[in-house]
Image (cartoon, rainbow, N blue to C red; front, top):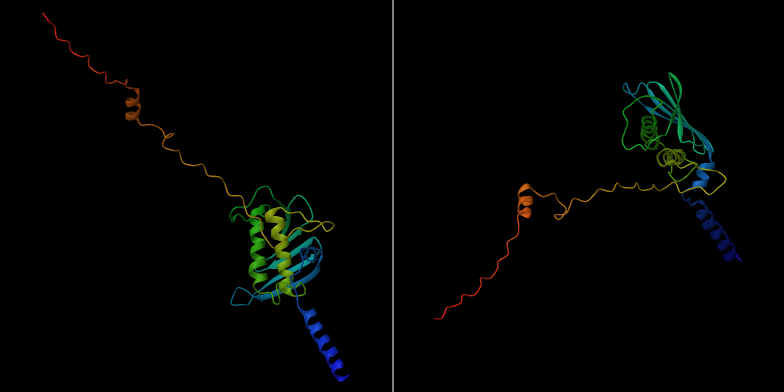
Amino acid sequence: MVFSKFSFILFTFIFSLSGLAQTRFLPKSCLDATYKMKLSHKGPLFGLLKQELVIDKKGCLIHVSHKKYFPHEWMLDVCREPVHIKVTSATGVDVAKKETECLKNDNLKDTSDFCSQYYDLVGVMQDDGLIFAEGDRDNLSSDHGKTFCSYLLIKKYLNESVVFSRYTEVEDIFTEKSKVQPIIPASPTPSTAPKTEAQENQSAAPLIKNVPAAPMTTATF
């Protein structure tokens, strides 16, 4: 009886430990999640100024606020077309709509320039979010997990133009689609390479065949 009671307690303990084991959050859980989190750390001027990052997520809506010298805000709806970012700065609110793929960092600081805002937002999420957030990256209850979830949705929506829906199967957000490499034409083969002037003159010259000489006959008298 004592042994069976001990076995039951041991089984319950092991089961509890297995329940504590965490697995990576699912794309659907990430999209449906609602949370608000704030990260801050010492910034410029020998740490006198604080850098703050606030992520306010309500399902498809992701509101990112960042403050370094001046406040900056980005509002995204990852379930809405066309792909765009609403940008709030000291000059007001602008809409940056995606019109082409961003292949390199755009140094323009125009708030209506999509690529400029995309790289600024991703940089803020990386430098002041993923680097400083605490906790397990794959756990949505931690600051690191919340930051990682928003970061993946933002990149998928802005970089790959994936428009999500909470009512259908959510696409994988953990892997990036490989970009199609441009096809580089092969160099011309020797047979199709342009001929030089000397080669053209040689080919234009008439061909003279070696004709065998006629046999000599000896006259008889």
